[in-house]
View (tube, rainbow, N blue to C red):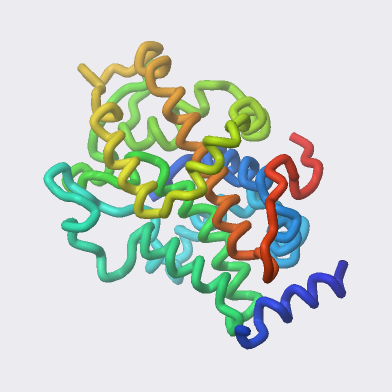
Length: 272
């Protein structure tokens, strides 16, 4: 395995011929992505992060936010697009945003000159940010900071709307991340093909289009009705993020020449 990983590293480096989803949400996305990797992509991921899976490294970009050295990464988790703006007309943060970050770290993973360390870091960021852009409030309104300033209660507990979507609705399911992923990871072949044929800009536009229903909080006392109406959307966005992340990684790690991915292939058996 060591020799094989070394060979892959040479191939990849040779000259070219705010919190979004809480910890469980990001782990769900990472686990689903692992279930849809091609053999080549699963091997490439393993060579970069070893025994850690995409589910395990998915939370790293949030964990480092307490490190002042990574303060620069804060704006990479979201993009602001107000209701009267589109992705094309909204001003972009010169320090980067979630779409710019996805593009940048995808380029690092594709770069034959990039170091193994930089590729490992890029992979961890990419897993996280693909999840982030699928959380509707990470394509948020500037004035309320993506719902962070909107105070609500969820099952009588004081919180804010952003936190409800990051973790509140997911945690209310009372499932481990592996159980949650297993329960929802049943996309059709048509869904996989459609979702993986879209681009990150499309994912952001979907999130913006979904915001109106996210903000439909009535008196702000969110309970079983809001959960019942919105948890199917939460599940769909997590599933789409995982499938799309897999598609992106399959493309990045594809060997030269045509290949037909086996969509049922998992990187390795996983225990909850």
